[in-house]
Image 1 (cartoon, rainbow, N blue to C red):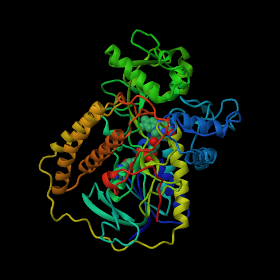
Image 2: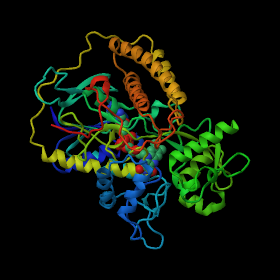
Image 3: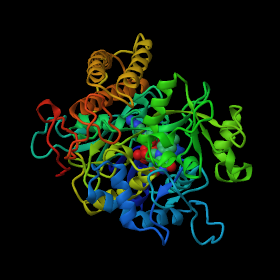
Image 4: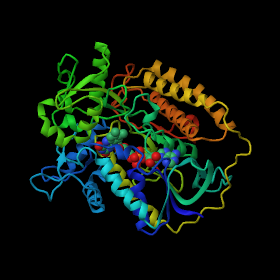
Length: 541
Ligand SMILES: Cc1cc2nc3c(=O)[nH]c(=O)nc-3n(C[C@H](O)[C@H](O)[C@H](O)COP(=O)(O)OP(=O)(O)OC[C@H]3O[C@@H](n4cnc5c(N)ncnc54)[C@H](O)[C@@H]3O)c2cc1C
């Protein structure tokens, strides 16, 4: 049976798109590789940026986004998102998300402030916003008659007309091959439209705030299907991830600095004012580079984020999750500073889309962290990403609903396993995985050089050859699918970084420290010679 829409990924982008489409009577398959709640969306702590306060303005939110994006944001995308902020948050309120209310006026939402924002404009549910949002949406997705949920199903590759041997007209996606992880079988899911909402690629780095699901699958599948990517070199490193041997990827929210948290060296000295006049409220890239600088300069493992001066009652009320989690590791943040290091946090680039979420491949949409809509430019402004998920999932859904009478997919061939066997040495996968993530951390991290990038490119090429050989011979597993996607995503990040001969936003090169006068996207196209093409926006047939 073919679906109207196949959605790959159940983060905020995937689930909100599913609800909009299903409410419009389209039959939706929502595929997710673990459980519905697994993904970065559930981990978001800070909240969702929107102009909700009378003293704030759309122009200020637009300006803050452009400033953070270092001149590379597309103004049309920025305005498109910012103007829809209020209605997007309102949609979540209507779905029943329990946002924190203003203590003085419970009719209004309480708004917090984060780095790079000139006003308080972050709607939040205490310090676990993503979890509150996702749990609310899961309830609706699971009971919606038009949504079929397929948990523990990992998409392997998209089925395209080109791969089916049909070279007439525009290349078009007709669904995907998906591994049912519990049954160990590959299923062919046909659909009129396919949405890649598979999140980002933080797991390409050794240290990341991202969940294990963030392996660049959407970006890699889209690229293999013929969709272009843009600005992959811009990886946001969150400045403050908890530094503790047993704490895997626990982020200390930006809001902690927004509410007065101070960064200190081990001897207690504050260092941010030396790096930027905005001190702890400077954008993330500035703070991450400053911490990287201080860690390297002093040969220390971490720096400290101190909020003790706000008092226990304030801290417990505003940061209950961080307080509880740090306590599990023996750190009482009401009396002790928190040890922190930077870690890969957000993939600003992705599959190039237009304002309807369309990629350049027919029938294929990309949403959320998988996409590059033009909103973030060279650096994402905090809390703009959940908003981007909401705005673009609605606009993509509208676009698809308007095209819903388009033809159904042709009969699709089954997955061919006739020439593969079970892998004899799984250890190859874990070794390659480890090597890849270390290579990216060491050579394609916060500060880059031409030499480091070249070294990374060379190693990645060797890994790619080995992984492709493995993929060609053995039956697919979850780990192999993810590794194949990670190594391709790594290649795209390195190639993009090498193409940018300047420092801008999140991309800082010691060999090219100046910022060029003209801001240009780095666009890679799988169909162009050498994979590069000039700045261009998405088109679709
Ligand atoms: C710790 C943390 C805190 C954050 N805080 C904030 C914040 O306060 N505000 C903000 O705006 N942003 C925040 N962000 C960023 C934001 O959470 C993400 O950018 C956003 O949630 C991305 O949503 P998404 O739907 O695109 O992807 P995700 O939520 O990551 O969902 C991706 C989904 O795709 C599935 N998937 C992936 N590959 C496949 C495959 N091959 N087959 C099937 N399924 C697949 C995953 O399992 C998952 O369900 C934070 C991120 C992190 C990590």
